[in-house]
Image 1: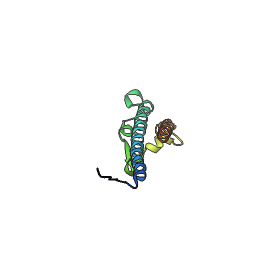
Image 2: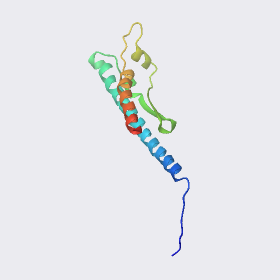
Image 3: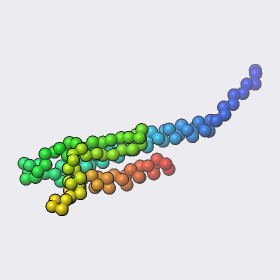
Image 4: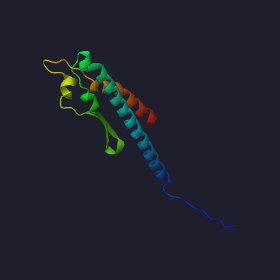
Length: 123
């Protein structure tokens, strides 16, 4: 029998790198999940807040329909965007119109859950 020995240098470095890659993928999943939840919650609030014309309101549903999820930075960043020009007036109000926020309450609800998910990941 021959005494052969194989030594691999840099294995610990490789293991750390692989762990970071795996963790990065998990972070991407958290970003995707929480952004989708925020989108869903925003649309639910819009249904409650923006009443259609048939119910005495003035909503056409365009603001809700124009609400989209945007994932950027290779999956590490997510946002919910509203595509109508008048969305800020609905969200913040004007001097003659009361605010009917949907985006900010959704953000406030999802932020602690997002932070909690990230904390669980790094423990």
